[in-house]
Length: 339
Image (cartoon, rainbow, N blue to C red; front, side, top):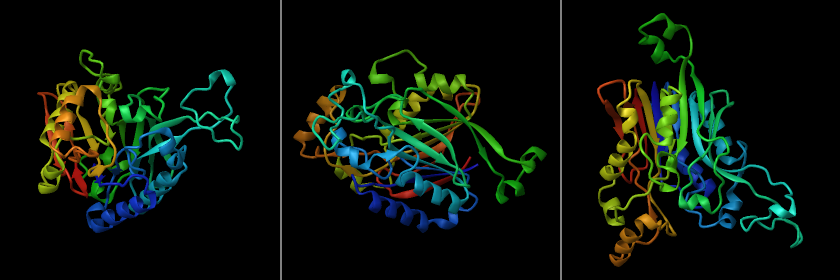
């Protein structure tokens, strides 16, 4: 398979500009995208991530699999002839709720102050095939602190989909058996989003984690994680060494994947992170002391993302971990890897 991730630095709320930036980066490496099977984008790829409230993200919520992010994915999947996964903030269904169910997180969206509507939103990904058809849709199961101010947990939990990858010229030319020549390749695919890799609410639990347990139980062969993963590196380190990956973040991810690394089944892993910085702060209790130290250093404004998107394989016996390719902590680029 030929898989790509698009790592870039979307600006909060600038949807059109972020889409244009993504298109520009893809156009700059169009020759390397020939015969691509799968392109994965980060979490909330075009809206930005660090929205401080439900009110602030509401203008950017997109109807289920039918907003700007999905339309971009349809166009891109058709143009590149591959599957495309993109993260977006999903507006599920605003409906008038019974008065007894009104909650503080519900917005006054009606013409009169007493007219309230329930606003159900999810942090989601959608996957389109080369015909522009929706082949997978996933809602984040484990919410991070930033998500909790506007999104609901997925009611379905982790899900797995059989994704079909049509044969390519490259595949046919290098096929080793008749089954590869004859038709599509199907991967049992688990899609996840960022915090899903961690225990719910960071409450410690014995391994394997809920996500790894699901991957093992479903015999997943492809794990695609769209993320907006933070880093504690200061801005100066991000800017001075943009092409160096964040070793601490990669080590954390690999530690979380240890049950899969030690597993007998080989799993292709795609970690599609964003890079750059956004205004505002995310200060979970478990990191408060470290963030306070950053503030004393005068380099703690806003949130910073780890970049370091990577594609590789884990498992298959003997504790195997193969990083086929990895981007730098601040690189805006497309990573393309044959796995």
